[in-house]
Amino acid sequence: MTLQELKSQARQLSESDRWELVNSIIESLQTTPIEKTERSGAIQQMKGLLKTNQTAPNDQEVRAMLDEHRMEKYG
Image (tube, rainbow, N blue to C red; front, top):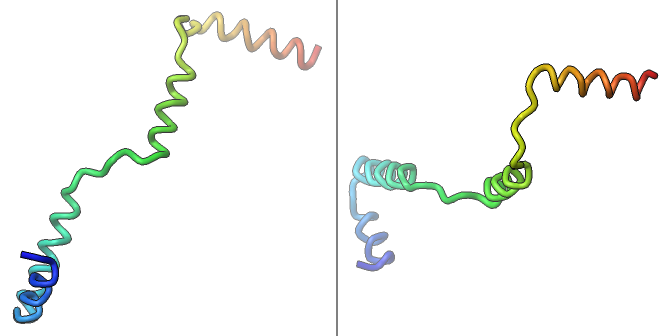
């Protein structure tokens, strides 16, 4: 059945049946999986850029880095 034939048959339905058809079409579109967008692809690429082989600093190392930064900034 072509789209034109389907449209023609839909026009022959009662108003309530046409609304039911519309709801069915909308439901079928809502369950269609959404492909990754370009934005989410870019986010994944950025995450990959941030990966390192180093372990994350522990609390003591972070405090030392902050102290060093403050000393450089405020003297």
